Every structure is written in structure tokens, then in C-alpha cells.
Image 1 (cartoon, rainbow, N blue to C red):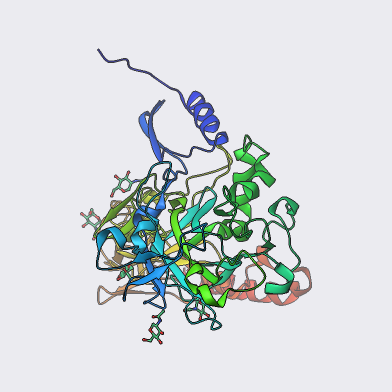
Image 2 (tube, protein in one colour):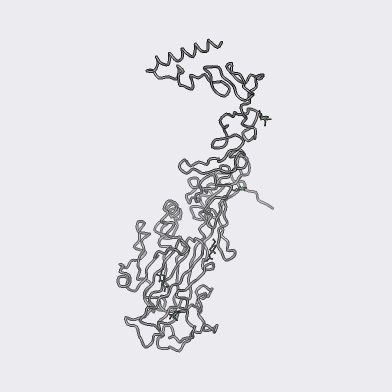
Length: 485
Ligand SMILES: *[C@@H]1O[C@H](CO)[C@@H](O)[C@H](O)[C@H]1NC(C)=O
Ligand SMILES: *[C@@H]1O[C@H](CO)[C@@H](O)[C@H](O)[C@H]1NC(C)=O
Ligand SMILES: *[C@@H]1O[C@H](CO)[C@@H](O)[C@H](O)[C@H]1NC(C)=O
Ligand SMILES: *[C@@H]1O[C@H](CO)[C@@H](O)[C@H](O)[C@H]1NC(C)=O
Ligand SMILES: *[C@@H]1O[C@H](CO)[C@@H](O)[C@H](O)[C@H]1NC(C)=O
């Protein structure tokens, strides 16, 4: 049995507004009954937040910084005096390749990536771990990196928004921010709405070997909470900030992340040079939750051929739904708006405005161009002797065929005059069935205009001070008319 639910527009809007206040934005469109029958309603929408580590590519720099090639001994984690462990890349049980940072594991992570040891001390042991999606991602939860070696004493988290071409720091981490980066230590809790985009150095995550403190975080939720309240109960407020503040939106958006490991945990002021096998990095887990950035034009994103792409709706297209489909480009593309309905809008690429086939340019052109300054689309290359923004007017020396509709190829006809039909007016005579030869004092294709209109000399249209002159001209024209009668 089917339950058929009829929603009118108002109830729909209420439903949608509630969904949006809760920050779901999970529907791009819905069918609804209105006075005009079943219609589609379009809404800003976004894909759900997911574990994004499934879709990334990882790269290590230098490339030979994973341990085990050649095999090497290292000291047990947490016990620097037991140095008879071995990392061997060619033996599965003893290998620690980078994919082990992203494998699923239970409560006791036993698999991890591990670096080479600091055998080249005092040359710094510095390793970049670059994570690339080849897709813009919006982060939705804290980034959490779990270290099985002690947490590094110096680290920078960096981000790129342009597929790795340029990089910006996201957060600095150090046991001593002043010493490591010449930055005052700060906590994300110190940030306010005015400083939320500040890049800080924090000392909260850099105490080396502490039994239950293995994680380094990048605190997304604390930043969201500045706008949405401590338990993120007011997501609408966050979304309206995001809607109007591009910098804030971009702050949470990345195409790549880079973890720059600059100094391993030493657990002491001095490095023990006799036991360099104590010092290395080991990461068992990296958590990154986010969603595909689809500019609020898609509610799903698919991974095909090793590539993430939005499943665009609203007649948009592109990996991020960042442009209108070909036949829907009459209007400038814009992202959907987070604001609640009815203020917010899906900003669909509107087929009724942009559609070029039979309706917008009345079938006289299949091209139109968007003129940004006046925010309008204009048909280009109107055929069938038409012209105008919508090809809705006739070119010069053609006139409107009253019995043809605007989309008729015969809508504009040449002024083929004909003496029998007496098309030429005011005594004009058709010449070679081509054009009206007008009597003096008349002009226009059909001699329909008295010349005084052309010269501006008609008495009704003139200004006061030119009366004597106009009076003279008018008199002359009246005389001319009389003469021809
Ligand atoms: C890590 O990346 C930074 C730029 O983000 C670069 O300056 C540095 O040389 C890289 N380090 C290594 C070890 O590749
Ligand atoms: C990695 O390779 C470079 C150049 O091939 C070499 O100089 C460096 O010592 C190697 N690093 C390690 C840790 O093996
Ligand atoms: C990234 O995606 C583009 C298509 O958007 C593709 O051409 C390119 O090869 C991809 N790059 C990598 C490194 O996968
Ligand atoms: C997109 O275009 C198709 C026609 O190609 C139309 O059926 C559909 O309703 C359009 N969708 C929107 C959201 O305008
Ligand atoms: C005017 O349009 C009608 C309808 O298409 C057409 O039949 C007629 O021939 C047109 N008139 C001229 C003068 O072309």
C-alpha cells in the first residue's frame, strides 16, 4: 500500500527550513504539488560528511623515508633501552608502509607507518607526508593524527587549495613555540569570531612520550563552535556565516594536506647519540572527515577511476559543479546559498532563461552571451532577419510579419512593396517592387513618417525658445503637403 502525501508549498518550505536549520542540506530537489500540478522544487544541497582517507593519495618526501630498506634495528617504543626490534620492508610482519596510516583497526592500533631512525643526527630528520585528493574537500571534523612513537617536538600542518601548487600553514605544533617558530603559544580556545582565521602555534600536543597522549589534532569543531555554539546546536548560524564569508569557507576547504614532521620526540633536552635508534616517527592512524565541495549543487559524490567527483544537479557540471551545463549558460553560474528558504536559493542554472533552442532566442540563434555588468544574457548572431536581446525585433529595412509568431522563420519580412496593395503610404509610389519613393515631406520605409518627426521640427515636440524657427518649418511642411494634394 502506498501512502500518498500531498505537501503544499508552505509545508514543504517549513520542512526544508527545518532541515536546513539542522544543517542537513541533503536534498537537491523534491517534487511537490502546487496549483500548477506536480512541480520540482530545487534546494541548496551537499553530500554527507565521510571518512576522506579512503580517497586520498599519500606521498612521502624524501621518498626513502619509510624504514626497512635496508632493514634496520630500532628501540622499542616507550622503552628506549630495548633496541632489538627490526623494521624490514621485505617481510610483511616487520614492514611499516605508509598505507598502514589509513587501514582500519580496532581499539588497539597495532599497525603503523614508521620512518627511518635518526641515524644521520645532527642532520634534522624531516619528512613530509602529503595527502592529495585531487578534489576540493570541505573538512567537517577534527583532523586527528595518532603517533605510536611519541608526538613530534616540531611539526607543521599545511594545506593547499590549488592541488598542491601553493601551500599555506594551517597550524604549528611545538613543545616550545617561541623557540621552534618564534610564535607565541596559543590555544584554539583563545580564538574568537574575529581571529578564527588566525594561524596559531600550539604546545598542547607536543609532549613527547606520554602514555595516553598520542594524538595531534587540528580542531575544526572548536572553530565551528565559535559560530554554532558549544555543542554545534546552531548550525544555521554557522552556515549563514559561511554563506557570506568566502575566507571562512576557504579556511575549511582543502585539496591537499601536508604533515611536515620537523623533529621527532626525544623525551629529553638532549639527544642520546649512542642510541639514535630511539628516534623516529610512527603513525598508526590519521582521521580526516569531510565532504566533497560541490558548491551546494550535489548531494552525492562518487569515486570512479580513482577520482572523486560531485554528482551535479541543478544543471551544473564540473568536478565541483563549478559551472553551468552547456545549454544552461544564459545566466552567470553561482553556488547554492546556505541561507534558509525562502531567503536562500539553489541558484540553479535556469533552463527557462538560458535555453537557446526554440524559446529564448525564439529559435533564431543557438548562441547567447552573458554580459556581466548588466547581468543579462543576449542572443548572438540572430538569423532570419531578426535582431535584439532575444532576436525578437526585425532588422533595419525589414518589418514584422503580423501573421507570423515570434519563432516563425518568416517573422521579419523585407519591405517588398506593391502598388496594387498600396503599401506605400501618403502618396508614395512603389519603385521596382522594392522600395517606396516618398513624396517630399515624408520618409520611412512605407513613407509613413512626416519628415518633421525626423528633424524634430514637429510643433508638439519642440521646446519653447525654438518656437519661431519651428513655426517656420511647420509652416513650410504644411505648405508642402498642400502642394502635393
Ligand atoms: C616539505 O615541504 C616544504 C613545503 O611545503 C618544503 O619547503 C620542504 O623542503 C619539504 N621537505 C622535504 C623533506 O621534502
Ligand atoms: C635517501 O636517498 C638520498 C638520495 O638518494 C640519500 O642521500 C639519503 O641518505 C637517503 N635517506 C635515507 C634515510 O636513507
Ligand atoms: C587529477 O584530476 C584530473 C582531472 O580532474 C586528472 O586529469 C589528473 O590526472 C588527476 N591527477 C592525478 C595526480 O591523479
Ligand atoms: C536540467 O535540464 C533538464 C533538461 O536537459 C531538465 O529536464 C531538468 O529539469 C533541468 N533541471 C533543473 C534543476 O533545472
Ligand atoms: C508571414 O508569415 C506567414 C506564416 O509563416 C507566412 O505564411 C507568410 O508567407 C509570411 N508573409 C510573408 C510576406 O513572408
